[in-house]
Amino acid sequence: MLHLARAHEQLQQNDQALEVYQRALKIDPNNAQIFACLGRFYRHTGDQTKALEAFTHSYDLDISWSNSISPINIEDLKNRK
Image (cartoon, rainbow, N blue to C red; front, side):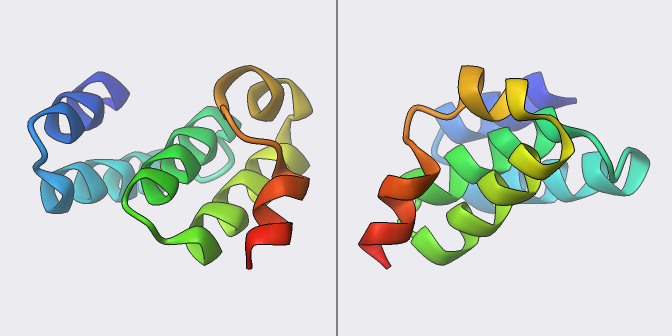
């Protein structure tokens, strides 16, 4: 499902990408990978607040996903707010 969301992102179909991420979270609401991908999505779409929330939630669930997927440090995001 995350591959589908990324495909929508690459086609700049952000509404569809967000819908897929939200569906994925309904299926697996404690999946750190989904939150990390969602954080990256929000960062790229310019919503730093939601990006920070998603990255932080990913970090809280499983630090390894936040470190490997997010291209930005959570502290850097906090400083941008």
